[in-house]
Image (cartoon, rainbow, N blue to C red):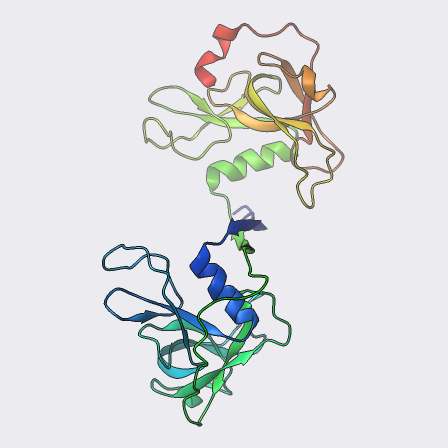
Length: 313
């Protein structure tokens, strides 16, 4: 049995968003060690606050301070914290209804073990030493056996309010290709490009998926295509990606390899970005030890006629 291919992959991007008046006040309050909720039209106080009443859909901006103490309503133990989570040691995820609030806030509880956590236990906010106007300004919750704290009645007016945030989004996972893609990757390591033909519509798909996306039937007949192909469409990239050692601007294109019925994407090199055009004939360029082409370059052939690739746009 052949070895199963697998590779660790990461999808990561920073999500930048502006804040409305309610979220701005809430996050600015955390920076100032104040927890704010918002009062709905029926008199409930929601923490964390929202900008529209979940019952009536009316816009709501009536901010009200709640206490940094509260009660655990439910919880789950996290025995193996992951990168970026609030605590590096095992902790409990808890929903806490802060004193003065009618809804619960999700955060971490620093507790010595799951046998010390229970629904109904009293907790309080542990503030982060350095605060910037983010939910992480609450470092975590901690057990508390004192009286409920008394809020000062803050109404959400702050100097230098937080107006925007950058929320990192990251997904770490291990990718394992199936039979069809494994054969495709093994062929690439030999500097060949292999697809699969649908037994029904007879189209050749590269890279193969093991089934025809049009007919829905399994594919198994391998077909070697290319290596040359035609640029069907392209875009000019002007923003440099982190960790990618390619100077901008550069061109990323859809390339219809000779003999394939599906265009794949690849970077175009060996030509100024402003000279790339639809119909450009290209070929792969391999670097030593690589399992896939580094980029595609012009072959010097005449441009392909539009009618030969228009169905692949």
